[in-house]
Every structure is written in C-alpha cells, then in structure tokens.
Length: 549
Image 1: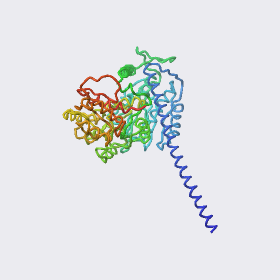
Image 2: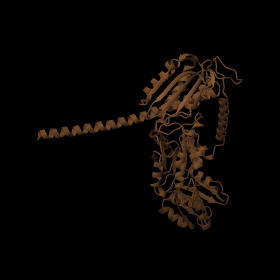
Image 3: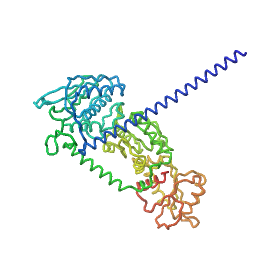
Image 4: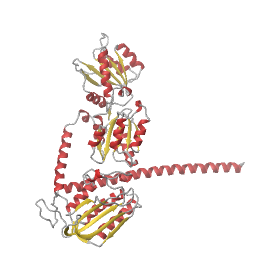
C-alpha cells in the first residue's frame, strides 16, 4: 500500500510538472510572438522615418553627398547581400555577376538604393533567385552610343509588376502588395531610391521587356545607369556639378514634387483650421462607448493584430473580428443575420491572391451591406475605394487615436440594436421622425428596409403610456417633443422622469421642439429644433454623446 501510494504521488507530481511546463512554454511562445510584433513595428517605423527624412531632404535640395573611390561589387553589393541573408533568413539566393568596377560615387547612398531594390525583390520572390549584374557600356537602352556608363541591374523571379502599377512605381506612398511578405513596406522606398539616383547623376527605370521565363513568375528587372565621368545631376541652370560641399542639384521631377508636397501641407493646414464641433470634444485619451461590432480585413496577421489592439482602445465595448482576405470577409458577412451585421468594416487593398480591397468593397455593397466601410492602404488610392462604395479611406500608417476617432465620427451611427422611444402627441410628426432616425441608423443607405432591422423604434403619443414603457423597458435613446398636449406633463417633465426613474437612466435623452427653448438647467443631452436638422447633424450629435474620456 505504501509503495502504491508513493507511486501515485510520484505520478501526480509528474503530471503537475508536465502541466507547469506546458503552461510555461505557452507563455514563452506568446511572449516571443508579442516581442516579434514589437520588433517588426519598431523596424517599420525606423525605416519609414529614415525614408521620409531622405525624401524631404532630396525634395528640398538639401541632401549632402560624400563621394569617394569605391568598388561597386566589394564595397556596395556584397555587404548588402550578406546583410539581407542574415536578416531575412530567406531561401531565395542573391547571385552576383560582376566585374570589379571602380567608380567615384557616394557609396552610402548607393548602398541605400541597392538595399531597397534587393529587399523589395526578396519580398516578392518566393522561389527561383535574385541576380545582380554590374557592367560597363557605351550604349544606352535603345542601342544608341553614349558616354561610358556603369549599368546595374537587379532581376528577380517573383510575381512581377502589373501594367497598372508601372506608371506609379516611383510615386510616393505606392506599394505593390500581392503577397504576404510585403506587409512591412513603407511605400516610399522606390521613390527615395529614384531621387537618390537622380541626385548622383544617374537614372533608374523598370525594364518592361524583362521576363524570367519561369511559368507564373514573370519577375521584374530594375536598371540603374551612372555616367562614369560624372557623379552629379545638373543644377537648375543645367550646369554639371562636380563638387559636393552641400548638394544643390535639383532635378525637374524633384522640383515638381516640391510644389506637390507644399500644396499638400497647405490643404492639411486648412483642414486643421476647420475642425468640426466633434473634434473639439476629443482628446488623445478619448474613446467611443457602445456595443459596436467591427471587422478588420487584412491578409497580414501582424497588421490585423496591431489594428485590433488599436481599435480595442478606441472601442473598448466592441466585438472585433478578423478576416484574412476579401473572400473571408464576404463569407463572414453572409453568415450573419442583418441584425448582427458589422457597424464598421476596415479593408486593406492589396491582399495575397484573390480579391483586392476595391473588389471586396464592390462585392459587399452588391450584397446589400450598409456598414460603414473604410478602405485602408499604404497607397494613396482613396478615390478608387470611395468610387467602389467605401465611406472613408485611411492611409497607412494610421494617424493618432484622436485623428481616427474624429474621422470615424463624421459618418459613424450609434451601434446596431439600439432601442429607441419617440414621444410625440402628433402621429404624423412622430412617424416622420421615425423615418429620419432610420436614415441616421445606417452609414450607407440603400433602402428603408435595411436600417429598420438595425434599430427598434417605438412610438408613444400619450406621455402616460411613455412613462409606463420607461419603467418596464430598456431604451438606449429617448426623443420627446416639448409640447405633449398634456396639461400635467411637458416634454421637459418626461425627460426629467426618464433621467431619474427609467430602467436605463444613462439613456441619451433628446428634446425636440419648434418653440424657442428657455435657458436654464436641463436633464436632456441633445436639443433638436424643428424643422429637424440634417441626418448628418443628427448622427453627429448622437455620436458625440458616446465619447468618453
């Protein structure tokens, strides 16, 4: 018996140790995942800030070049090859075919350009190889004789560049995201690289005739050309610059972009000056209360987790779901009843395979989804998303919590499932208000039948009946006319009763009247004068009451 007891205790101890180990391993795995999320996020921000600083310096004509004699292969390409092999841990090899070409150039800036091109190639290549070729030539891409030049090509066997993306390839905030590996792209790397090459007197372009001859993987080839006897672009007067105490060369492209950027800042400043009433009530710590339901659609798990964490801070009472692609979003929405449909849907544009964001938005609208749909992308394609049926567009990286809330509250209705009580002694007025509230209940109106399933609206023409309802039933919103045609009770009296004795004493209380309201302490949250305000103003006034600090 003693032996059996000892064996049993030993077994229990072993099981407990095993369980503790499993819990510990699970904790460490979760900790490692969160650490990876933090590291990737910091790397993304650092990369973005560095590129933006270089972009602004180049545009302003203030970037300083430090040229020196260097071997392009040994001093530039091979160090980048080694660095990427260690960082990316990729199985796709980077091959170098090169003569030992010596050139007088800023090796740090050339490294930056090559790192951008090679890291992009790795993002879009899952099989095959990446090749770097360096050679000297006295012939241009059209076969015409030119001065002696250095030609650098970066070729890959990836997914290639679609025709629609070729024209915008070197624009700011543009990225081609057709696979899972490009989630951390800032969208300005190629733009910065192009400006740096121009600054050093060269040019960069995509070879549109290139084909890797691998089925399903056409690949892409970027070409850089530098004159061997000149390292700098021409200045504004067209004179070649050969010394660089402070770089002053400014290409035509850069000058045009400088105007574009200054105009953009003017527009943003004008928008800042014209802040809405809602914006003045929102601080950096504000959040939106209410049982909202939100769907985040993005092919990258990391981005979905980051978005979810941010929106949990802004909507602490919300249910937030995720979908990995457009097809998943359609399937998710189709499985829900109209009453439980999402209040907000955020959709990324480039998602691995299948439908992109624009196509997903069109499909959702075709299915009758009247949620507030917000397109999200690192590319400036807001017009395309709005034309497809989105109500708003956010450019990655997202702004501050205050900026996001301000933008959402311009169109966001209170959450679905609201119970509303209208108290008005005139049935015609009550029914008119009911129809208008149904318009308020949806961010994207299709037909009157859709929002009728979002909110449950009751009408009372007798204030005494309204009192009974308030005692027995839960209402999120109560709208009462000032004149209830009852000598014993006015709208103000009913509002005061609702605030003190109703089942939900925190309901939003609205007073509606065609008469001038006397100043003084009142218990209602909102005052709507007759004729009623616009649907947009009514929606904003209701949402302002959902803001918490």
